[in-house]
Image 1: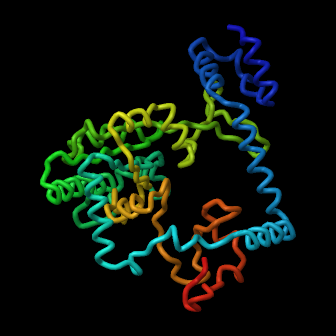
Image 2: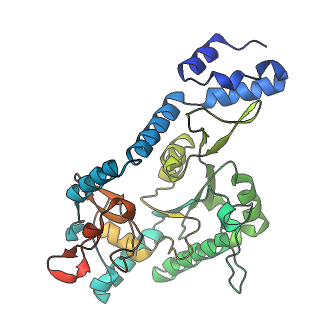
Length: 335
């Protein structure tokens, strides 16, 4: 089978013609597989991502450039205003209970869902299956998936008890990947969804991106198969759209979404206090964080940069800036 001229032109433009190097050695089925993979690629997006990372790496190769970058971020980062923040330690018990009641009410009304980012395998944990299936070493032998499912079920019960109803539902949206979807589905089914209604557990896959070498060339896993990897947590937004998950949320009348990562064993899924706080603050988006323990702790900080909220990694902040204190409290860090 001859390769379509349009395909050749796309590959030439993207400087990826090596993907057809073994074309003549492939059988018809393998050729179809390769063409399908090639047609799935957004070459402009891949090239843009590669060039962006390349430029960032090049800018970090010299100390002078790194110092310039550091000075720039130090000059323009600002603390988040107190008007849009809250702290458990600085909020009265009465106000916390008010937030909790508001959050539980939203849960009882069916307005809250939780969204789990579970596309990663447990490679760094030393296992070859999804992280959510990992036994974290508790005496109960419960896995991350089980712990989270049971927390959802308990929160539904709390909302039912608080508002004298039996209809509280917290839909559980789980973003998997090609590597974790099938195993996750099978695991949940085998364990009877840990007591949750399977109709309220919605799995969807994030997209894959081709893996590149240092020259920006797409790698081949086989003569007819591209090497691909999940597109990371940032791929959530694309996956929500292409899998019509936003439509599903709208159909279920979801107003508030709590997003979390699968390996966060301490997460309070759909935390009613946090949900209630966000509702009271009329926040479009909020983040739940822990204060730095000490100035040089290796954690990122949330701040404002050019009037936009973002996380600045600890490696991007100078030691001087990391040790700055609030003007009205010398014991409290500014960032």
